[in-house]
Image 1: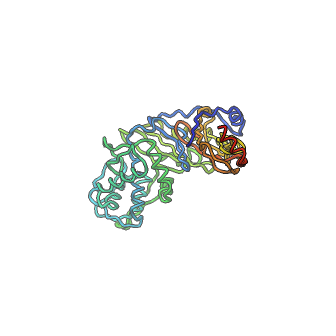
Image 2 (image 1 turned 90 degrees about the vertical axis):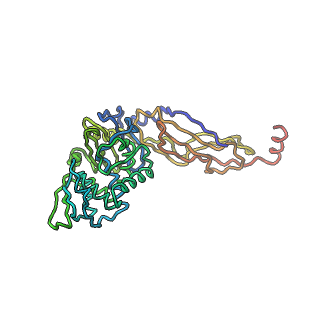
Image 3 (image 1 turned 60 degrees about the vertical axis):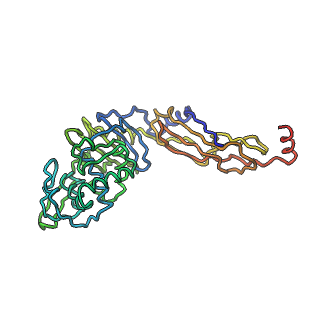
Length: 376
């Protein structure tokens, strides 16, 4: 049997310690103009800030992140692609003016899709990798489901408006976190300027400049990712930044100022969110009942230190859920696992630590056991 204790941690000592940590700050969450936004840690997936992050939205060219993922996982960048009529007929938005019959490698098409957001390149990618555009769209939706992007539906490869083409800020953060694990994707989304080359005609080339203005020195540590703009979607941006070994993803959808929105979120994540020790090795967290032992209860202590990253203002809202086994038969050994303690904030688990016996609990002698049974 498992007993579960739920309570909000309101530890004055932790709060006082936190306020005197070097560089500690207490600040309100960032004010963003975007209709929907989210700030996520790339390593842990922890969400530090969210605004209508589960609401359905038009992703515009942020769609191309999934296009690139599917192409990287199902195609070979060295493949030579013959441009078909579908790709050559694309004329809306950013294009690289692909012409039917031209030959270009899949890797160069990915470069165009991610650096300058070329709409015609994504159609050429889909027709080559999927065999046809429709099959590639199915591959995109299958991948979305596999990643847990349950608020997403793709109908094209480039983000043209379609009432059934939608996603959420949360899903886009999940997708981007995954995509950054691909070295080539990671490299392209932080490329400021480059040149793409055709196989045929052999001397054709095109200079590309990234549309993400944050890459050009507007904020320390920017290393991606992608812009998106359509009349329906408005101005959208997924940005990433790394400082002191931590990489964060900021998503801003339908924003009045997408660059400042992401900068505000990064400032919040890097300057306000702080590591807080919520459990110390050997600290008593709970107690566990013992039967047949010299003690009726044993301390359940943290096996090791546990830190979580949190806004100091949110400390009173941190919840500690303790799970310890029911009555345990003696003997118990010091360090024996008794359960776990999980720390969460607004339903999001931030970390957990094993709880172990704080001391040995030997059995009572045979005469004491008989006495207890006789007068139980």
